[in-house]
Length: 174
Image 1 (spheres, rainbow, N blue to C red):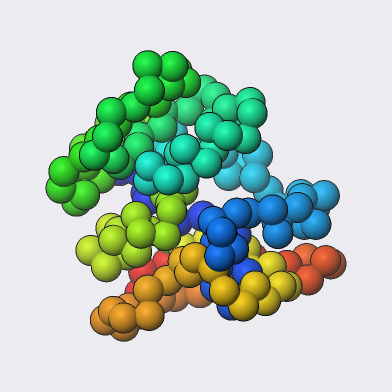
Image 2: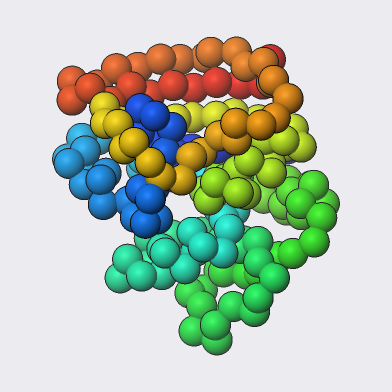
C-alpha cells in the first residue's frame, strides 16, 4: 500500500499555526488533553517538514521525533549534529513526495510549516487534512491555508469535539 500524506496540525480558530512571532506557546493551555498523538505517530513512518519548523523543533530540547525518519525540505545543509534519522531534501516537491511514498512504511506526516503545507496542497499532494482547531483567536500569525488559491473540495470524514473546546476535523480529498 502506498504511503498517505497526512497534514496533521493544530490551528487557532482563525487558522494560524503560529503567532506573529512564529511561536507556538499559545498551545500550552491545551497540552493536558490526550488528542491521540501516540496513536497517530504509530501510523507514521516518515515526517516531512520545512526548514523553519525543523529548526524550531531542534530548540524544544529533547528531539520529539526520535525513531522516525525526518525529511527536511531545505536549500541549506543540515548541521553535522542533526538527530539520527534526519535527512535533507530539495528540488521538485512532487518528486520528493513520490519517492517518500515508495520508501515509507506507514504514512507520511506533513508537519509543515505553512509554506510547505500550502505548496503540497496547491499541487494536490495531500491525502488527508487532520486539523485540531483550538478555541482561541490569535488575531495575527502564520496562517496554515493560503488565501489565494484555487478552490479544493474536501470530504469530511470525522468531526470530534473535546470537553476543552478543541474540535478535531478530519478531511479527505473529494
